[in-house]
Image (tube, rainbow over all chains, first blue to last red; front, side):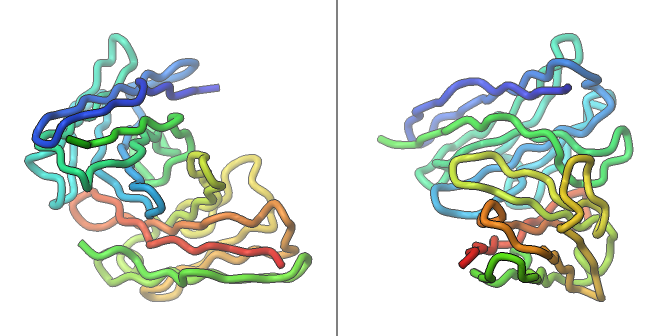
Length: 122
Length: 110
């Protein structure tokens, strides 16, 4: 059974950057899209973008273009999400999630990481 | 980008059926059969309940069903149980290979 294990909680200063990792174990990595979804305290879910590791190209919603970079390393079955120019509104739990369909994304996420809390505070 | 529109809360008694709506536009819900539904309990990661409008992942109870008409998708839960009490989110593919979520619906089992 595939599992996604994320890196630990982070506390960052405004204006800095954070990089969160998501390591897959127990199954195929490269052919499934990996997306990043965040959830601010008491708020809803927000998709930040996704990557299909074997293709290497990431897609981002307009809101995050220029501030988010999603990458993947097939050799270690690890995906990364880097968010720059952090502000207090970026305080949230960040999840990685795998698409339910291989190769042709259904934009539905059946396997989720445990979440990484990122706190932005001066 | 605006989120999909869901009711903030719904409630029902054990054994009853409830339906949660999710309204978008022709650029998301109405334009693609890539609508999903997630259940989220407090402090937990979301769990996929429905994908591609009406498909259930393995292991999800057949009490959960999905449908779509025009720009509105719906999640129906039949035979409500106490453990169904949670937040529910819809999502849809939007043009440019992005995904948009609804604002979430809190389900209370009375």
